[in-house]
Image 1 (tube, rainbow, N blue to C red):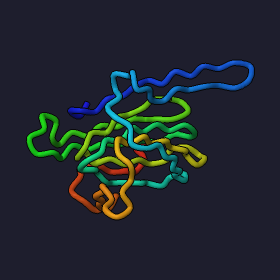
Image 2 (spheres, rainbow, N blue to C red):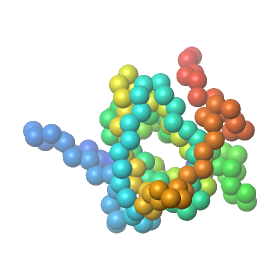
Image 3 (cartoon, rainbow, N blue to C red):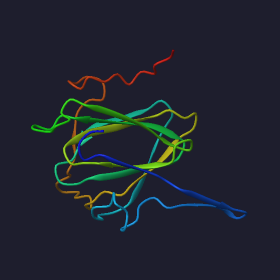
Length: 151
């Protein structure tokens, strides 16, 4: 994995009333600090990428549907510079992924229905000076193709 990236398999606890899934706890090895929690959605086939943060880490989980979460390490001096990590996250693979500062990331909804994603970044969103640096999802220097790979 890219240096600083961590993944946690999420445990689902079902009973006759429904189910419970803990996503992030302050006593988890993967935890660093808390900023806020938000939910976002992505429609089938849509790519939401690429961006990175200079100050915050992201903790991403897909709680409905499926996404292909992709990370690219372009950090100067990183032992994993140039590496790409793919994580399939969601209904069929419940997991939480920690995305370190300065690592490009994004995802594609690969389910037939809208995907619901929860993110618990380490900092609150600053509307005046967002800690978000974006590039085009398809036209860039990242060696990654978002097209489905049939085989």
